[in-house]
Image (cartoon, rainbow, N blue to C red):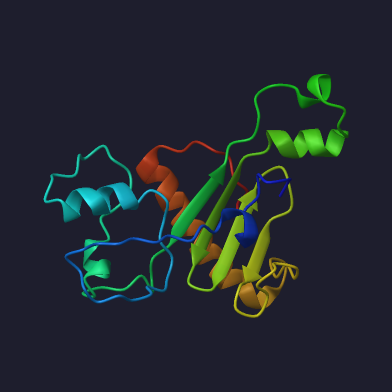
Length: 169
């Protein structure tokens, strides 16, 4: 995790406020809402067809109170740089290596898993550790959770054609 290009909640979590005149029940919706979901949601709200190539899902049913986001996974990715940072900016070799690393992150309920083949993997319990200071990745009690979350990342990679190399966990 480096500079603003990180998956820390303070950097990646963005509040979303939507006003829909036809929906009169003002409510706060909890759960994880992906940045790629607003466009399909708005198209659905307008009664328009959602193009099949458009990433994301309509969350209109959530806005209407018919569904929740309780089990909605949100994935994030960091692509790394293709250029040589060391020739452009005075950096350390470690920072340059991290700049070139590809990251994938998944947020499942209260758990966040960050995977990177070029750096330390991370697992955080956001309920008990909201500032992501205690990495639980190496604790044996979380191995099944890590495998499940990593499998969800790989399903997303297969579905989207993502070719990032990630560690086997």
